[in-house]
Image 1 (cartoon, rainbow, N blue to C red):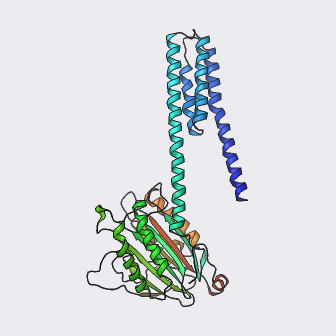
Image 2: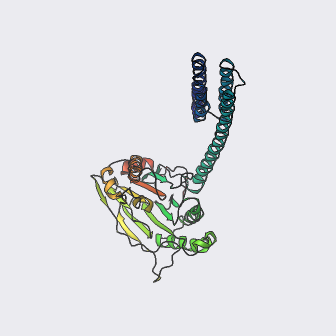
Image 3: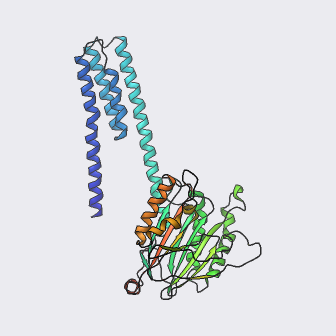
Length: 385
């Protein structure tokens, strides 16, 4: 079915391209006939350049060259019937049209090559994103999940924001983090943190110890990813959440990351109390350890995790995006709808372009009956402990 749909879409695009190609050809015909029917002192031939100039907008260099050749041939025909081919005026018009047509063909070829390169870059970026950040399952344990990732760089679908979720001894553990910086330069450290989380999350350790393990990995290998200009300035904020299947008391440990938002039915939005430690890679001045915070996450509630690229997004007047205020109107929405609303509203707030990578995860705790029905259903990227 998918292959058939892709094939049909390709045929439709090919048909549309061929149909549009009739437009410059018809334009050449109309201009030629009009020039031949007008007095000899009126010259419409220079307008033929419109045809090859128009063609690259919907066709490739070969079709553009064909249209350019037809335009030059039409100019030659006009010259033959209007004063002769050897007149200075017609020679200049023919040479000028030929040169402009060649320039348009070269432009079309360069444009086509860059388009192919961009498509390849996007394909590689998408593949890298799936390798680096496995797609979150729609259901995992008692949770229904939806996620959103918006990269700040145009040609990248991944950057310094990261998230992951996994099952562990009757609970779900979730990580969301943000590497200092954005785009491709932050991918290495994001991969390091994600790999350390997937390796350590299944161990029967408390969240503060898990955070300490991530800290050790960043300290051990993070220096290898630093450039001389970034020496001592690389760090990662991270938030670790552990949601038991049956117990509404949810545990949380923060390493310099923004606290989550708890959305309850009836437009209620609360911020669970959190005592953040310094980001991963930043030594604590007083040697303080990571703190374990606990809050109640009841069935029917939605927990919204996000990175600072969301709340620090500015509009044209420099105002930050008021996430808590905006999501209050969508507390009853399903996770997928919530992500759709936030994406549309956030991009409208910034005028369509973010200044930093942004990631969000919506975790909806399903009612008991629905939870039992989906218990143990894991999507791609989730694993059993």
